[in-house]
Image (cartoon, rainbow, N blue to C red; front, side, top):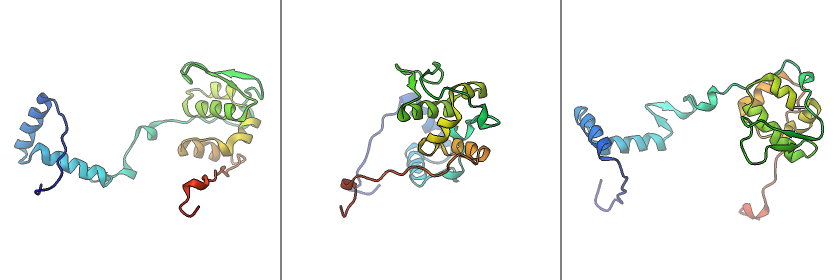
Length: 170
């Protein structure tokens, strides 16, 4: 570091620092240099020479279940659905199917987190799913799996106009 460069401090447990120092010394470097190199890689979106786009993440491991046909979705078209604890562990796990916002949340949780086709088919209703599909906020892989299986689902998505105060020339 050159004179005048701002220095930042991080706290590291002594035991961890000592182990890191011993290993770095064996490899002819310093812990500080390893940290700097790690930060450079992090900021440049690479780690160990692997671009971020090619890294395997937890999201890549998730499996999204899709029934054989939309007709298998026989969930209620109206009324209240109470999700089991493994799908919604919040204080209010009851959703009103008649309300678009409530039903969207219900369907998003179910599509993203259910581990059973039977469960999905018992919660989702084909007509309501088709109505809400364009506005559901889903992971790309989940949306892609469903749209590939059911090309009849509308593929356009709602776009929300930014408030005028967010534009520079407003």
